[in-house]
Image (cartoon, rainbow, N blue to C red):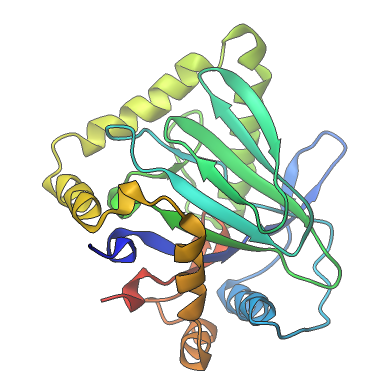
Length: 262
């Protein structure tokens, strides 16, 4: 048997803190990489059973993102902790759907959909998202923030505002199918960039050999992921070591841990 973690993209994230106005427009709260690294460390200490008394505010959101899917892969699995309430908004060719997500529940994200995560934290906690993607093709361009024109701003604040506005605009057209050309263009552009890429084929070949696509019990892999967290790793995240921390990411401040698995 192989080791599925050797083929996976996995880690943790603390979604962006936002304000949502009466028209449901999203505005980010001020932050920077150092602040998000500190938030992420505190959230990971929560996960290890250590408490803290910071106040998070009302809502946290991910970027709306998606992947076109290559032979139906990869699926992504996420778990949210420390949520008073949490939701995954899913926009697909079939329309738009909101899925409530219980704390600790494993949710599956299918390729061919645009998703955004949003949650309200427990007080006084920080929402933490654990993620596992079945292969590492997102590192090769097989994941992208959703926009209507294909242009993604470099500034993270502008990106967050633009991508959420795009998601809301597309979702508003879903009742009569007007969103489908928008999704076709988004997924089609991604598919063209990935077509024939030998690195993509190699990543999926590794996932098959390691058994990543055939995992029956995802919780065991999330437990193994958590076991990688020790003081040395937390120190590296706080110090913004690029191997285990990046900002901005799909979930705001992100700790990719796959580099820790040989």
